Length: 239
Image (cartoon, rainbow, N blue to C red; front, side, top):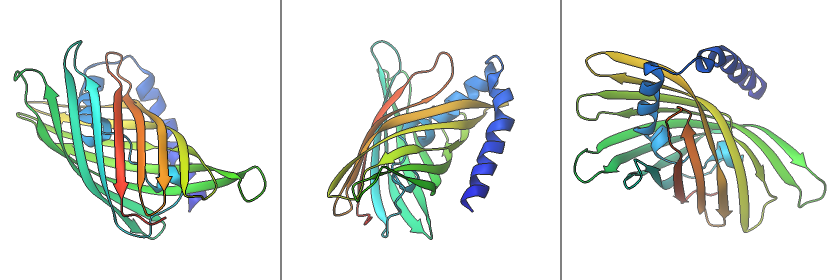
């Protein structure tokens, strides 16, 4: 199962690279808009089994906040809440949120939603003894939706979280980097869609009693795009 998943992800990357490597155009701008105005680019990466390598045994509640520069003096604030639901070896995440550009009333925000499916692929022990850490490779697939005035936005992202997970203790710090591929579609009077490289990185905290937190950065790579900075909190999961 895990080897098959890695082969599938490698095949997707190989097929997508030529399309992403070309000069950026209107389709890339559409992909960027669809990603950053849905939770896939508007909120920090879900901090779940794909990053920690450990699936929660209970349903958890998460809250996320993302901040992105709109121009030199104005910012976009994004908020999301949802559930992480363990199913087998995987975790399903459901998020509802709000995209809110703070631009002195000249633009409006909108509702957004997303679902993601996360799984641990490989866990490699690093070092010896009981305190040895684990190098984790996971896979995370997300789909997003938003309907701002005059448009429908659809997005998707396939990512490969790479993280270093310390041995079990009451408090653990988990650094991670996450390369991926994002797709976005904007439907207005006409329809545009495209592919972009995506990237996330950060550090998370796994504490006892089912509490986790993370802070990180995220970006869809349009040449004129911006970085997102965000934080996330998860309550109720039992690892």
